[in-house]
Amino acid sequence: MSYTAFQALVKRDLRLFFQDRRAVTMSFVAPIVIGSFFGYLFGGVNNDREMSKIKVASVDQDGSAISKRVVASLTTDKTLDVSARGLDEARELVRGGKITVAAVIPKGFGDEAARALFRGTNKPQIELLYDPSHGPELQMVRGMLMQHVMEAVSGEAFSGTGARRYLDESRKEVARATGMSESDRKSLSKMLDSIGDWNQRPTAATAGASTGATAGVFSMPYEVKEEAVTARKGVAYNSMAHSFAGMCVQFILFMGIDAGMVVLQQRRTGLWKRLQASPTSRWTMVGSRAASAAIVAMIIMLVVFGFARVVFGVKIEGSYAGFLGVCLAFALMTATFGLLVSVLGKTPEATRGIAILVTLILVMLGGSWVPAFLFPQWLQQASFAVPTRWAVDGLDGLVWRGWGMQEALAPIGALLMFAAVFGAIAAWRFRWES
Image (tube, rainbow, N blue to C red; front, side, top):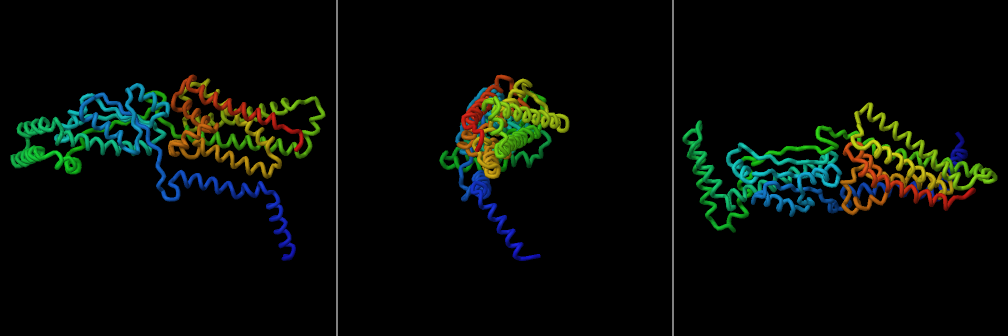
C-alpha cells in the first residue's frame, strides 16, 4: 500500500467533512445538547436540583382529628403538592393524568386507627387511586403516607385529646382477653399504665419523643388498598401503550425529515426549476408534498398500532374518532414539519444534521424517551410549547386513559395549529431553486 496515496485519501475525506460548516457544527452540538439534557434531568452537576413535586389529592371522608392531622402533615411535605378533593373529582383527575395519586381516608379512620395501634386487628383501609404510568411515584407516596399516618395516629393516641379514652379501652380489653397468660396480662397492663403516667408529664417533654418511641413498637394502624385508575374499572394498564405512542411519534418525525430531504435532492437536481415552467403554483407543490407525506404518516401510525393491538393487546379504550383525529392531526403536522425542513435547508447534508437535532429535542421534550413527569416543574410546563408533547399525551389519553372526543379536542387543535404555522412558513419561504 502506498503511504502517499493513503495520506492523500485521508486528507481528502477530512477536507470534505470540514468543508460543510453546518454539518460539522451539528456533529458536535447534537451530543453536547442531548448529554446536557439528560445530565440536567437526572441530577445535574451537584445533584442538588429541586425535583418537581408529586401531585397528590387528599380525600378526607373522616374529618377526625387524626385524619386532619394526616392531611396537614402531608401538605407540609416538600416533595408533595397536596390538594383537597372530592372522591369523584379525584378519580377523574387521576384518570386524566393531572394528579398522580389520590389518598382516600375512609369514615371512622381516626378511631379505628388509634385502636388498631394497640390491638393490631380491625385495621382501617386507606385507598390509593393512582396513575399506573407513575409507578415509582406511587411507591414514594406510599412510604411518605406511612410516616405521616404513624406520626398522626401515635401522636393522637398517646398525647392527643383522645389518648385517655384509647388507653382505657385497651386496659378493659386486656382485662377481658381470654387465652392470655396472667404474666402477659400483667406486663401489658403495666405497659399501658406507664403510657398513661407518661401522658401526665408536661407536653413539651413528650411531644418530640412520642412519635419515635412508639412507631417501631406497635402495630401498623392501617392497611393500604391500591387501585390503578385507567379508562374504566377492570381495565388493566398496558405499559406497551405508552411505548408504542412514543416510538411512533419519534420515527414518524424522522420520516418527515426524509420527505424533506427528497425535496432538497429534487431541487438540487433542477427538477423544481423545470416544474416552474409548467402551470404549477407553489401552493400546489407545497400542498401535494404535504398531502403525500401525511398519507404515509397516517398509514404508518395505523399499522404500528394495529401491530400493537394484535401482538401486545394494546386496545383503544377511548374515543375511536378522537384517536383517528389525533393521528390525522399529527400526520399533518409531521408533513408540514418536513416541508419546513426542505424550504429552510440549503444542502441535504447540513440540513439533515440540523433536522435530526431538532427532532431529537422534540422527542425528548414530548416524553417519548423519558416520561414528562420526571421533568422539573418548569420544563413540564414549557414542554407544551412543542407539538410532540401534545401528540404523546393525546395518544396516551385515547389509548389507555379512556378519553372521550371532548378531551381529544385539545391535542387535535394544538397539533393542527402547529401544522398551520409550519405550512404557512413553508409556503412563504418556498423557492423554486436554492
